[in-house]
Length: 113
Image (cartoon, rainbow, N blue to C red; front, side, top):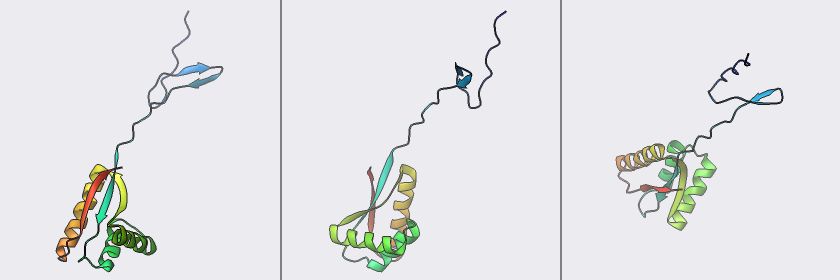
């Protein structure tokens, strides 16, 4: 008489025996690609608006938002955050909508990480 088959483990997988311990190999799930949301400097959008936008859309604290705004102002662009593609595109759309509602030419874009 053959021994009974080992029970199926939760989550699937083929259990293996190592001594008295049942083990199984876990499959690795590939992480989705991530994208940078980049804000670009312009000569017309007020610094206070950029800080407020970074706080509301990107959930930055006041100090971090101010520091990032200054980087964008001095270097011409800055990374506001890194997200999966759909979230990054949604944040860019929110930036453009908020800027356009107030008549500012602030631009943002999505780049590969």
